[in-house]
Image (tube, rainbow, N blue to C red; front, side):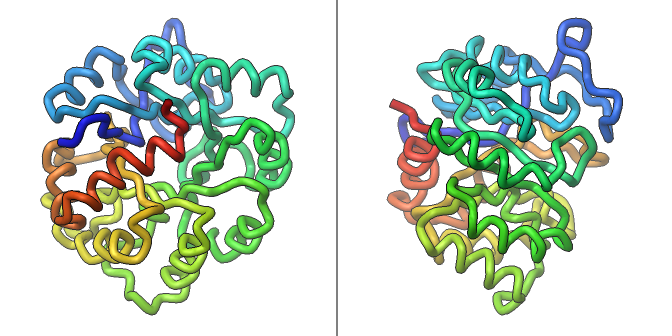
Length: 269
């Protein structure tokens, strides 16, 4: 593991008596503490991390902001979830707490409407933030033209949610790669949810390699710890790291994905 490697996708949850979940959530996860997360990262030798606002908290970003502080702003960053009614003062407070992006997720309840996308983008642009998106596949054709008009970069979470067996010439695959090749947007290699065969997720290899080969300078990687709402086999984070080694066998490319690219995207000093 290279020094200053970064896990760019994790969630901290609970305790619910202090950080209650929103009523319109799609699932109710167990607690996932900073201490448990750090134990996993230490086992893998990962020094930096990004805490992503889970849908179960909606736009109440206290848990994510507090988690960044608990983990240490010298090594942690956060992704919030805000709507277009967010104020400049609220954004500044989040930015001061180590938040560097906001999230749109419509695969689960709790997040802001995609109608908020242009308004949110305009408000966060002055802070140098980006937007991270996880939406159903049939939503992308309506959203991609909007993304091209936004003043901020977009990260395609979970490799855009594309299925592992998506063809190289699939129109959505082609369009996402085209946007990534502009040098503005990013893709997050976090692919076990894309698998259609399950553990050990070998079917995701072609998709992962396709992104790494086409846009190595626009890829970051994440574990998705603690793997919320997964039924059956619980992913092993060491196995997920091994997947990246398969998709990006070149050590210099892996250094970009694990160290250089996250440092730029999340503005680690």
